[in-house]
Structures are given as C-alpha cells and as structure tokens.
Image (cartoon, rainbow, N blue to C red; front, side):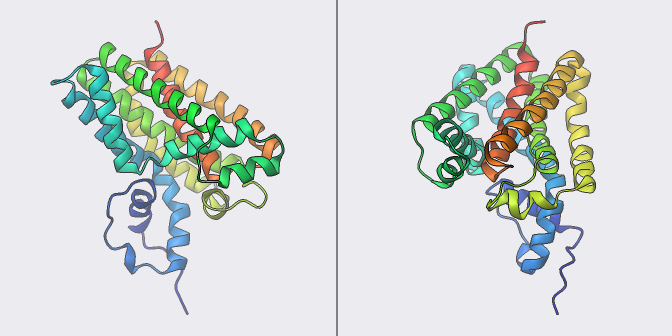
Length: 264
C-alpha cells in the first residue's frame, strides 16, 4: 500500500521543478501519488519561486547595465530568464493569443491551444508581450535606483505567480481540459491560496514601501484583471487551461511594471 502523504519539504522543491529548469534533488524519492499531492500544495510556493526568478532577472539586468546600454542589458536578462524557466510563460502567452485570437467556438479555442505550433496571433502576441515587458524593465531601471529597481522587478515576478494561484482558486478547469488546470489547479483551495498570499507578501511589501501608490494601483489592476479574465474564460471555453494560467501570470508581471512606471 503506497503512502500518498507528501513530505513537508517536497512542495517548495516541486514548485522550483515545475516553474524552472533548475535540477532539484531528492524528488526521485517521491511516489507518483506523493508528487500529485505535493504539486497542489506547491502552488502556494509559486510566488516565492517567482521572486527567485525575478531576482536572477534583476541581477543580470543591473550587472549587464554597467557594461552596456539598458536596452541591451534587459534583453540579455530576459534571455537568461527564458533559459532558467524554459520560456514557460512565454509559451503560454503565444498559445493563448493563437487560441483566443483565431478560435471562434470553444472547441476551436481548445484545439488551437493544444497545438504546439505558433500561428500569426501567437507570434504577434508574444512579440508585443516581450517588447512591452522589455520596455517597462528599461523604464524601471531608468526611474529607480539599482536596489529599488531590483525590488520592483522581483515584486512583479512574484505578483504574476500569485495571480496564477488566484486564478486556479477562482476559475474551474475547462471541460475536457488537461495538464495544469485539470490535474493541479482543481485542487487549489483556501489553504493553498493563503500560503500563496503569505509567500508573496514579504516580496511585494518592499515595493509597497518604496512606491505605495504604484503598489496599490498594481493590486487594484490585478483584482480587476482576475474578475475580467474569469468572466472571459468561463464565457469562451467554460474554465481555465494551463496556457490561460500562464498568460495570467505574465499579465500580472506587466500590471506591476505598468503601475511602477506610470507617470506620477
């Protein structure tokens, strides 16, 4: 008889394994049932892993900025980040834009989203998303000092993953869905969401200290986005998919960066 109880140390490591390409030790000791249980609880650690990814992005951008112009430094940082995460959320952005741009019926949207090829809507959407994020990161580095810029970049990365956790809790999986939304998100309840909020708070709090109005605007925009996105997903395809959640995470990052760089 197998024990499906997940050890206390596994969920944070499973979150790292799920969101990055960093080799993680000890997880081969877990049974399949323990991994399935642990992945649901790992969602609570997504904001902290996002903060670690954001820390790498900020460090590369700021270090490279001492040698090259800010635009070059940011592009190098985004390249390193894509390697670190396997371009996980960028792939979701492209799939989401392809499906919701080119799909008419719910079946069309789900079918296009499962296609690994990138079409015209996906290419344009990904180009615009990456371009906007790069421009916003350049603006953050130009507006804030090095430490404060790092705080903003890290907070945006954590907030994006928090938004994905919130969407898992408030949007049901789409009918006939597979992957993240069906296997993991459907198990996210108040306890996991509370953990996600707890791991995000210490990361986002410094941003609120250095730019309280921007932080408030970012949170308000995030709430508005979740309400709108939930309505869109339920109306168009009956719920969420993994690509929808990844798109939400990327959008969350952009909302914080937009709030941080908006004219006072």
